[in-house]
Image (cartoon, rainbow, N blue to C red; front, top):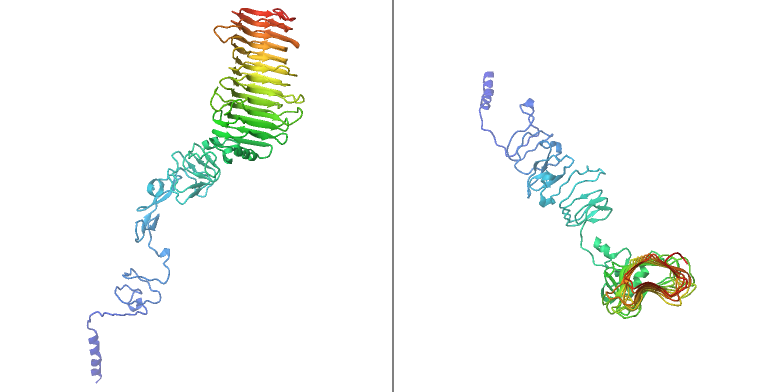
Length: 599
């Protein structure tokens, strides 16, 4: 019986030892992978479908996942696969795609710069696509964070949203094509390119820009031409001025003069090129001593101040310490023998220390041209104001001489006008080129020209206290029947030296009707006609005090070289040159010496 039982037990064992097909599980849950001791590996390597639940954080080697993987934790960079040295993960294509490893170029040199090219990734500056970054190149930029400014250059930059660059940018010739504006904020050196500088900038070569219209008062860029047209003073165009000769400038000038100062003591107005019409006499009345007014233009016959009615410019001094400074313009009139081009007078009652005034590079004429019809009664009239320099004045009368080019006088014997230097000027086609007025002293006339005047320099009779007139290195050519210089009142310390006198018929070079301490030396006298008649070099007709010396002069082809008339006295004539003169010297006076020593 025991043996049968063993046999029965053994039969199932034999049955279990048979081979069966591998099973297929639609859902298998492994609570734990088989351990090594139970014949497993401790990991899952199976491939299949369905649900898989792993517990206790098993390790999976080379799984293949065909669906979407959802990880409830984060995948750290250390869990990613290793990549080649100096690479980054990026998508360089033009559309959505999986990232790939992109090699980084070596741009570590001092001139290196890193750029991005679509389609190829990161590149060094020499490979930047010009269509993308405008072909920007950099030469030796300073390191990032360094205070050493870059010495690089840009050939084209697209800054459509604007750019601010500071600390020493250099833009070299060829320039930067700026499409959206660039603000440079500190110490840039720019040699070309359309840049907007908001801080201190240095431009090493010329930049060009459109020149704004004269009178523009905006934040627009001022070119060199614009600045030249504006001048150093308040521009009348900023106050409504009109330089087209089509509108009146009385109010504009008044407003500019009122505003053109940093205090009431100093005023300055600039007139750019063009014609500025005026209806009334313009000018300024000083309100205290030590004030000055400056009026300047862009040049004679470049800036034209025009009065159709002959008004001109007038200045009335409060004190001898006031001054005016006028330069570089033309004063014109549309009338005949009306008004004065420039008047300088005074409101003070006695002579005081005087500040120096200047009139230079000024033309005075009719607005119908030179030697035409229109003219001022007086080109320049100085009344009781001392210390004036006249330089490069061109005073032009009408075709038929009339009026007076320059007159210096005073209204009171208590105001003695002194110190006038008249140089490098022309006084042509006037009745009197220069008229020497009452009580005037200290006039120096040098390097001037007196042509086609009735009388070049005129001193009327009956004037008092005249002193110190020097006429040197000038040329005279007056009309027929008149002397080039006529002195009817005695002037103490009269010097006439180194001049040239061209004399027409029935005329003389000098006619001195009242002499007082006079020196006439080194002059040349000759006819201005091929058939001279009654042409005299020097006529002395009068004497007051002192003596007159006439020496070292040259007389050619004259009727009489020197004529000492009956009222002359104490005249010493010696060491002159006479050539082809009918009479060298005639002497009808008393106490005169012809040749030899002093009387």
